[in-house]
Image (cartoon, rainbow, N blue to C red; front, side, top):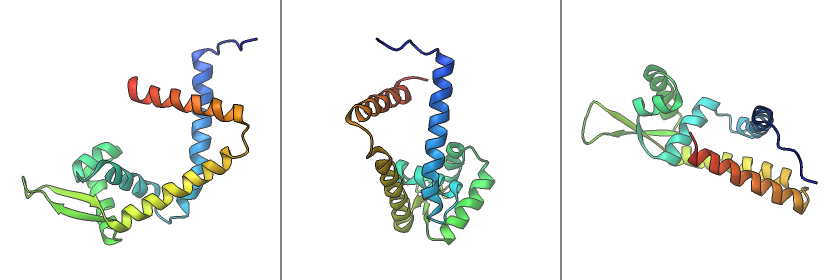
Length: 146
C-alpha cells in the first residue's frame, strides 16, 4: 500500500531538520582544517566561482564590504588568497584562491565526501535507490525553482 502524501509543511520541516543535522555532522570535518567557516565559505565561492571583487564577494557572502576586506586581508596574509589587479579599473581589487587555498578547500571537500560515503555504505540497495532519488529531487528543486 502506498504511503499517504505528507503535508508540505511537515515534509519541509523534516527535510530542513535532516539537512541541518547532516551539515552539522559534515562541518565537524571542516573544523579539522583549522580554518573558520566564514573563511571556508569565501574560499569556496572563489574556488568554484572564480575571481571576484571584494564587493562581489561580500554580496555573495551576505556581509558588508569592510567585513569582507578584513577577512580577505587575513586570508591573503595566511596564503589562502591572492590579490589581482583589475585591468579595467585600478581602484577595484579582485581576489582569487591561491594554490594553497584551493588545495585546502578540496581536501576538506574530500573529507566531507568520505564521511558521507561512510554513512551511505551500510545502507541497503533499496535505501540507496531512495537516497539517489531524493538527491535528484533536491537537485531539481535547487536548479529549477525559486
